[in-house]
Image 1: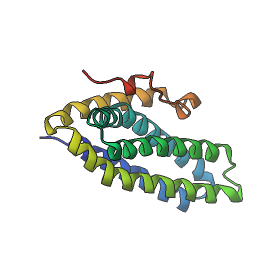
Image 2: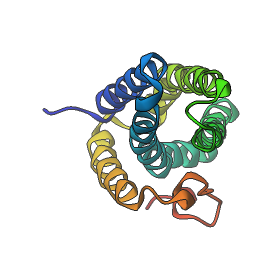
Image 3: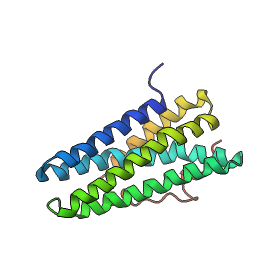
Length: 174
């Protein structure tokens, strides 16, 4: 059997963490390029998680009336929104500014906190609500969604896309 969804997400998380470290260690000339790489990795990853794993977990937690699981997935959605805003702010800041490194540190801390919670609490809850045999299907949906979102970058609209109850991410699965 190939890689599963959780292994893929962990691998992608590590890639983003590595880029964040590079961003803090690189020269001013390299900052913009690395920031673009972070955006190109994180944004499609986050939107695809929201559309697949998060939305399914949210739907199942609601159906089973699990406020704890709902809190975890809602917090993950909110953390993505905060990270989107931090990324936008950083892109608007000159790489030569004294504020750039401080903002990058804040972005790094927020992303690392989010990834730690996701790999811990959220994955644990997901495994309680999503059957093992469903994971490969979700993994395929995730890969397709991520590729679709990657093709939409670097649209600024993508950074501020808000997923609302009318969007597909919140529709109950058949």
